[in-house]
Image (cartoon, rainbow, N blue to C red; front, side, top):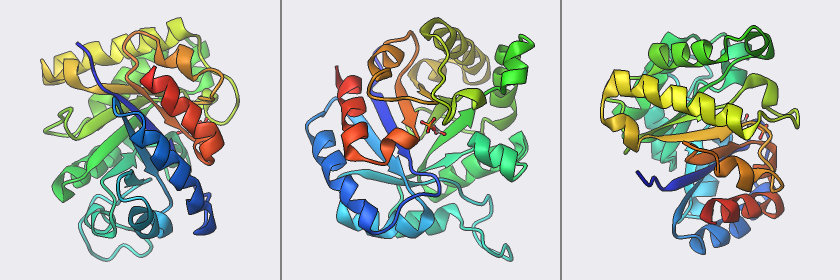
Length: 247
Ligand code: PGA
């Protein structure tokens, strides 16, 4: 089945109001690539100004709390980011799983919060280098899917991003065959969990996607888009990746 590609950026803890100027070029490229969905997750402080600056672009959060409100100092809910103009959020990024010790159950709660607030979610999974070297990549990733997939998982609001931890920010990427193998395993697991909806769900690859390797990675079987960190910070690098998605 033909799935529309999704090219999503993740600014992580980078960016300022001045950096939002990069979004102008990205929005223009997105307008010229009608066959591709383009989205950018930005730090919470930039959601509102980004959404106001480029209303045609999908602006998202990088994380949300699972509760709608309450005594959680420093946290931000899905309802809050939605009110600021976010139309989606990333959940379960490996940097949060590692730095904030987020469990699969936490990630499931955060994805459910996105659904409750009426926004989309990109749910991240991925193995460490030690897990890959031990031959456990597939079982780790499908285990994360089983543990973190929320109730009501459906392609109209949820995508999955496969991001091998060892490929993030390192310039190293798996082979196209390795990516296709894991994506195939994810889709098979999804079929067990959500039946026919698995065919519609978009599976993104993330980890050191650049203008140079985007076309090859996006051409792999079962790859329906990319989640891009470093190369999403500038229009000069992100626009060619959008174009690769449209090719
Ligand atoms: P990277 O990050 O493209 O800088 O490797 C990807 C991600 O963490 O989403």
